[in-house]
Amino acid sequence: MPILAGHGYGVSIEHMRFQLDQQALTVEYAVHPDDDALTVSSAHNLGEVRERRRRPRSVECHLPACGGWDVEIFTKASSDRIQKLP
Image 1 (cartoon, helix red, strand yellow):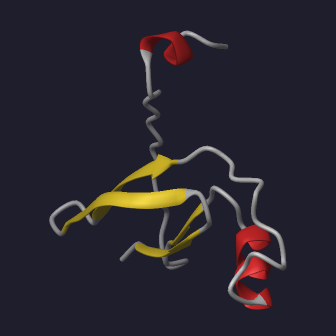
Image 2 (cartoon, helix red, strand yellow; image 1 turned 180 degrees about the vertical axis):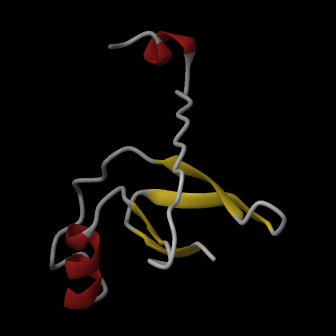
């Protein structure tokens, strides 16, 4: 069974669904603009700073190694103007 293992800073999980009959995991998420204002002095602790730098704007899923998997990724832009960018 595929699972959502984690996501990095700058990503919010909007909706998640697992289809048991197809063993399909659907994760809808949003990527937010960069916030360069975070510094060690403004962070709550050093661990928060390390986590934000470790995997910015990423989504991590784990798939069992016992079989083959088809992975489909669909993207949607925040506006029509951005959607037309190369």
